[in-house]
Length: 474
Image (cartoon, rainbow, N blue to C red; front, side, top):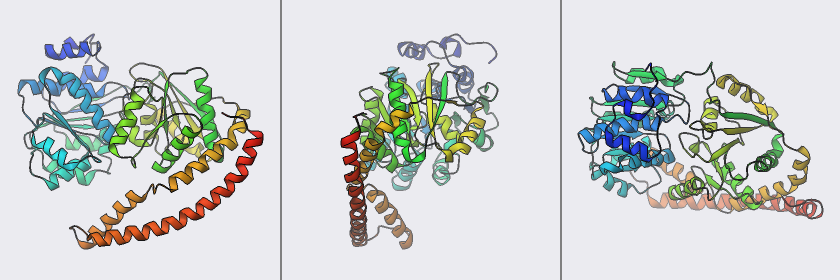
């Protein structure tokens, strides 16, 4: 679109949608909305690629809802997305805009009751927002709904969904869809999957990519920093980064990213123990608890969220002013998505990455990918020394507590059940087989926990003595 669009009324949207945009405080469409919405309304397939925080959800939600109100029925549109939290966020945005037409939507993700989800699908909602794995499960297990009449297929975070991890589920879903439909692909980083997307889309596809500002893949409002630190005192540097940031910004929300579920949980327990109230978000937490944690963070009741990459994509939380990479991601694209949780919609934000000597190559790869150099974030090394022992003690105590909860038991039981199913060639394995394995597993874990507990207690006994006589409180 050559000329600048000043408001939503120039995009050929219905009056009720314009009223909804105004009531939500949306005045001027973003570039991806200006360019993609008119093309989608003409019936074209669309590939839209823009930086995080650029309004991609509205770029497909508004035209889908306009077409729905012209010919309302369910199931009208299917939206696929890689993470559960993003699925709920997209559904909420559809609900907010579609309130005027009594929109019916449902969210189909893992971690929730399948029977309840099946009942929702059988009621023919207008919009279905789903993760591929759970939707494929429903297609396998029940026939109470059909996707044969959908008019729109939306693939959000398309580079992730088409990156190979979801191929089996997507084949099953695509086989259940009609040949005639509009296909809309959106992502912040489309480059790797662009060729594959163009093969799937029809000849009438409209492609729009945001200009990259001379190769810079992150927004100009984002202040990107690094802190160089030894690996064995990473947590102490994290605490000092938070304290330094809080000295100038007492109310801004902070997101901390780490690599594994266990590390995420340990970090959350450690920070809570030393006085930094936070919530954790990772794949080993029950879905209702994940949503509760996210709601606490979004509502600013808790100002620190510690998460794995399940929170890296698409989540729109305007209050986030600082993103910290406790662990540098191995793939530069994941860095782009993580830091995109702040500096959204034209606001300023900061991203700080803790970099060990082993991470220098990863840092350079990230700088090459984003087209800019990170600058150093200064912290007081002397303060690190004063809190080092206290953080070490808190971390060891958290490890003891976590061992006592059988943190990985559920995941390992699931993997073992899957293995047994494969060996039996399908069908339900005998309950006694699962029970015997669970009992054996518990015995082995109990012995290992006892060994680790003895080691940790010896360490803590020494460190508490040092802490009592030398260290101030944080």
